[in-house]
Length: 73
Image (cartoon, rainbow, N blue to C red):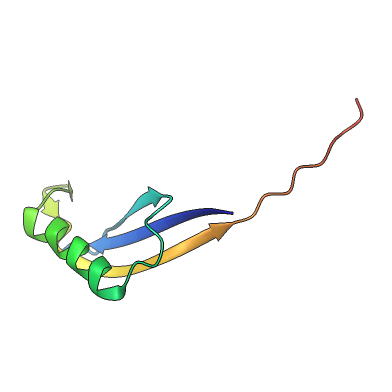
């Protein structure tokens, strides 16, 4: 099953952006995720229209299960 860690940030203009990280380390703790997000906020890495994404909004791991079917052509 494919997993993606989604980290969502906001800025002063109320814009949001989501950073998707494929196949994150297993058993990540809330403390580890918060610390990683804080580093991103502190570094001011991402911005839009001059407003830095400096607010942590949410974090989640999304699992995707894909079932393929054979199709007769």
